[in-house]
Figure 1 (cartoon, one colour):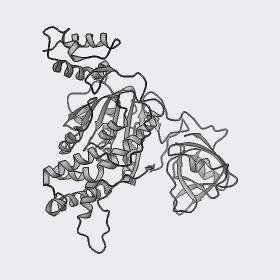
Figure 2 (cartoon, helix red, strand yellow):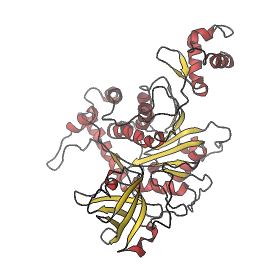
Figure 3 (cartoon, helix red, strand yellow):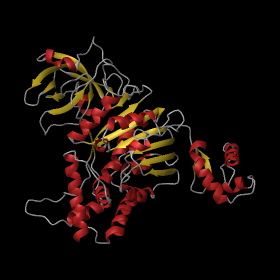
Figure 4 (cartoon, helix red, strand yellow):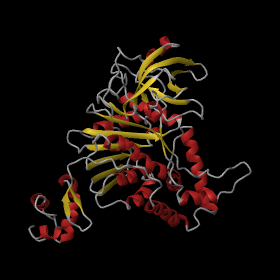
Length: 487
C-alpha cells in the first residue's frame, strides 16, 4: 500500500516549484512505488490538493480565480456524445436499431414518457425507457444546465474545484453539460445519484468526460443517499459538503421533493448553490416553484431551518412578502440542431394521414429553474421601496391607476405578434401579472431588451384587470418609462 501522506507532502512541496511528475515523486516514496500507482494516487487526491492533471501527465495547481463565464451557446449536442448514444443503441439492437421491432419499442416508450410527464404519472425506467429517454431528452438537458449556471459564473460564484452532487442524474445530460461548461483547468469531484436502469446509459456517457472530471455513481435513491429514509443519517458536520447540488428534471418524479431538497441543502457547503431545473410545461414548472417556496425562509412551510435564499430568477423584491401565485415561469434559449439519432428514429416512423414529422425530435431548450443559496447572496441585490413602488399584491386597489412597479422579468415575449407581453413578478403577487407594451418608445425600450430574470423599474404604468385571463396587465405605453435596474 502506498504512503498517501508522503505523496501529498511531496506534491505540496513541488506545487510551488515545478509541475509535479509522478515519476519524480516515486523516487522519494519509501519502497519506490511504480509511477502509475503514484499517478493514480495523485488523481484520487487531486481535488483536495487543488491539482489538475495536464495532458502530458504532470500535475499543476488549479487557479484560485473563479470560473469565467464561457459564453455558453451550444448549437448542437457534441458529436462524441451523439456517437455514444448511438453506440449504446447499436450494442442493444444492432445497426438498424431505429427500424422494425426495436424502433417500434423505442417510439412507444418515448410516447409513454411524454404522456407520463404531461399527466404527472409515476415514471419507471427499465433499459428500453432509459434509451428512449436518452434519445428524446439528453440533448436539451445537456444545453439547459449551462444556461442556468451562467447566473452563478457571471457573479464569480463557481470555483474551479467543485464537489458536485447530481440528484437523479438520469442518462447524463446535465453531467455532460456541466463538464463542457467548465473550463479545462477546473477539477470536479462529481457524484451521481441514480437508482434506475438509467445508470447503464449514464456510465457509458461518463466515459466521454475528461481526466479532471472524476465521477462516482451511487446506485441508490436520493432519500437513501441523503439519509432521510433509514437509520444512517448524513451528518453535515463531518461529511464532505457539496459546492453544487443539481436537481435536473427530477423533482417532479420524487415522492416528497421538498424533503429531499431540504436534505440536499443540509449537504451543501455554506457558500454553495442548489440548482434545480424542470421542463417548461405548466405542471413541472409550477411544481418546481412550489418546492422553492417551501424551502425559503419566511414561508410557512415544514422546512424553515435551512433559511435558504432565492438567488435567481424569481427574486422577492419586497423582503417581507411571500408570493402565492402559481409561479409558472420559464426561460427560452435557441434550439439545437437535430441530432442524428433523433432524426433516424423519427424518419423511420410509419405515419398515418394525420401524423406529422417531428414527433421524436426534441431540440427546444425551454426550462424553468431555481437557484438557492444559504449565504444570503442574490443574483440582483435590490429591493423595492414603498415610497416609490406599488406592490403587485395590492394591484386590485390600483386598477385604472398609473403606478410605478419594480419587477423581475419572468418570460420572453408571450404574444403572437401583437402587443409584446411579458410575465413579471415582484415576490408579493397573489395573481399573475404581465407587462403589456402597446407602444415602444426610446424611454421604455429597456423592457424588450431586458433578459430573462432581469429587474426593471416601470414608471407610470397603467394597471388593468384582464377578466379573460384572470390576471393583471400593467400597460407600458408612450407615457411609461422603463429602466433596466440589473440585467
